Length: 181
Image (tube, rainbow, N blue to C red; front, side):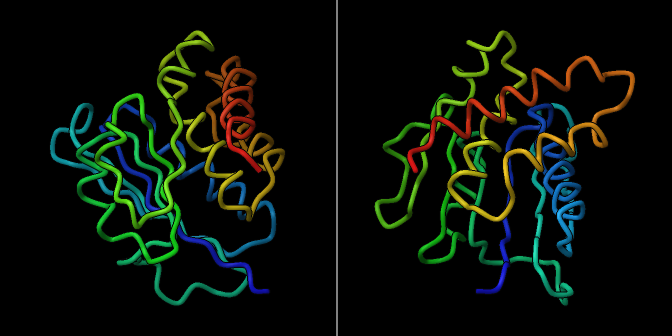
């Protein structure tokens, strides 16, 4: 079975969308996959919209643009409204239900609901919601191991912030374990 996965990650600027994408791309490269990472920022940056697309494949990636993603990580309601209609049939959307009403989820989409903000708050820092959501995605869309992504944190997080690596690794694990097998 070929290894190919794509994901669009989306939220407000400041929610760590780009960090999630960068981390996933780094872990993919370190796991021997071909990767592409395309960040998109809204005009406002922090507080504005932000999304990125990551493609992981065992073969060279011919076109990194994804119109109909196989999966999404949705951190807020505006992102759900934008990307839910584009999700491929049979695709998976990981949705932060701390900020998105479950009633907005389309019945014909496979949704993995994770209260990422609430879980991050329980870990001591709401800014960890991105890692909780990414951990949930890793369980729902198996292509990389949790350990590979946790290990890649060491190369993605600046040495100035190295003290944050363990708590980010824990947030990934919490999100991963929150999703049923």
